Image (cartoon, rainbow, N blue to C red):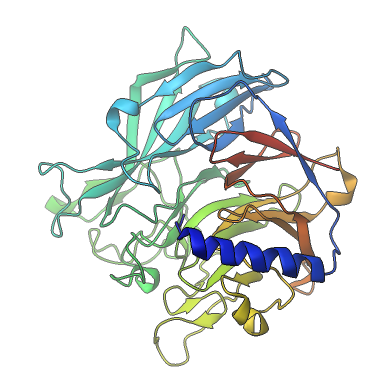
Length: 422
């Protein structure tokens, strides 16, 4: 995410308040209802309901803590599921323990996966660049004796990715309808993609990855052979690229050209994969992901050029974009969309409590707190209507979806709120 000066935010909020009153409102309005009000453990960045019918919600806190609360409780029943605060995953603003995913067979195998970040010491600095940080994906099991407690002793590290800077870590693990594990990684940080990771398919940075946690692959041969802790799905777009012992195209890649895919989701009805890709200085975007798709970063930011690129190169345009500056609205794909500073990808609503929201992709802005929605026609590939659902000022860290398809907003100040009708 991003930080801005107080004066800059005041100016943006002033314009937002004026422009919101001038726009039409084609979308239904929503409101937020607090849930789990007794939870006070810090900054929640992810929440997921266990896929076992138990009604347990697992709330992930950036500092390295996961708490369990029961559906319908006020949060006073919270108990610690996992605590890795002693690993110091949260050493800056955009790192930390960032997500949790349950294996599709969790009800019987009790496997789950976490994504977190760490600082390297000199003994673990990644050669040849000696990157100071790394991102970690681990598999663990629930304790055999306590279903509300993780067994840290079962940890199996699947993947460690060298990171040059402390920001742009992506941050979500998600199992798709195909049973594979998806991981979005940012471009490694700083600003402007200094290593050109977005268009470099030899690095995992600035990519959406797709892994098979139920098998193991190898790369290289002879003394260079290396066993991976995961498999490569046979239909990954680069699965058949020549094996160059880790020096060629990375076969884990599912899509690329993403700057910082912080939050993304599958539409539980259609299977469509939606990504909120956090922008640089001017544009925020929502992308509909296709296998092997190139979404342009860092040649493009949103639907606009950012850096020179190869002549004739083709990039997939965003489905939705909005600018940071009101002066850019005439150049936007949606000139009547209000502005913002940092997109938080959400979900297509498929719950049953609010039929008027059905089929609307709901997303928001971290800095301003605005929540928007749009309807997308899959046949034409176009947004049919879009607009503001709610103006509120809390910083949104993430959205969440429960087992019934109802949606929630997780706020930086610790609040968790359910999306409801007014």
